[in-house]
Image: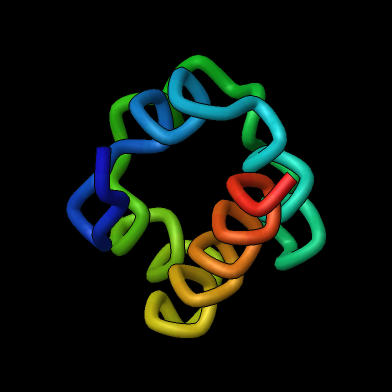
Length: 69
């Protein structure tokens, strides 16, 4: 699965729960909130005043590091 700005929070967390740590580091402390599960990455970033491209890159970097293990 490739994560994009249109991927929902629920889909990302289903793929890898470690993504929650990345999102929380970015300032998205509502990762466990049931209503956030249906939001896309772009929507969540907009609500939190974050740059979706930056957050997406951090998630991609995390996934690459995980895959290299």
